[in-house]
Amino acid sequence: MKLSSYICLLALIMFAPFCRSSDVNPAQVDIITVDQLKWGYLNPLRGEKSPGAVDLWGDRTKNVATGMLVRFNKGFSSPPHIHNITYRGIVIHGAMHNDDPDAAHMWLPPVSFWTQPAGKQHVTAANADKNLIYLEIDSGPYLVKPESNHFDSGGHALNVHAANLVWLDHSQSAIVTSSNIEIAHLWRNNKVHDAESSLQGILLKLESGIPIDIQSQDPIFKAVIIQGAITYQSSTNNAKYQLEEGSLFSSSGDVMHRITPTNNAIIYIRSHADFSARAKSK
Image (cartoon, rainbow, N blue to C red; front, side, top):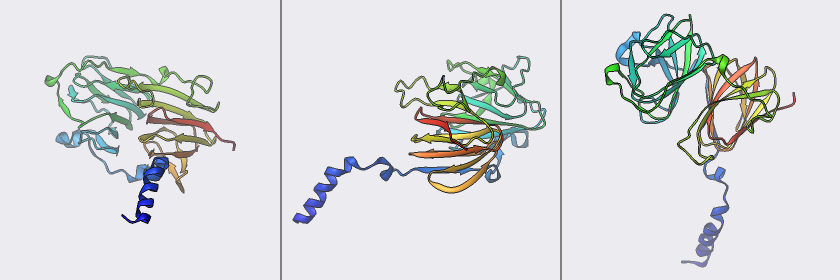
């Protein structure tokens, strides 16, 4: 080996550990606006009798985590059924019911949250002119099966009315650092004991007209507009986007998300604990 080649190889070995991870895995931001959505059916076998559905991220037909939008016509009521996997739901529009087949209707308004464990019999119904939810799974595929296939996965259903959410301010949370922001914790993956690796789902409540910076170094940061609308810009791109309810912004790597709510907004965030939110001066 020539001396010059040897020196180059030695330098690469010595200095490679000091290369920034962002040089190897550069920051990325993805934006999905509601006018980009291409709708299909949640249960294709039922055709037009099925709710409409569209993936925001992931792929509900594969064994991967996925976030999707699902819309229901007024008066929709499913037959009793089960799912092969556990899912979470957040109401964006309308009034939704999800419970045991014999349970009385408890209509959940926008910003309400529920979980449906794998294998548990239930019905889902909708009671408003416009009904839209965000539905999330940690693995797939997402399947609908007859209630005769029920099984005990050890999970338990949870319905949380929007009025029962617990909102924390900056004095009660390490994630938010400004008085203009409130946070509600919805779930956390307790199976992962390493706090830096634990997944969580939270809601951020933002005041209209107050610019917000969300700093994330998370490899799987996902954010869905649940209520209101925002103007969005990232540190990776000067372009500005108007994001309405049902829109998504997501990132990997070191990214600053610059947000200005055009009216009071609530955003759902799925991430590790590796992000912070603070208000900027106007």
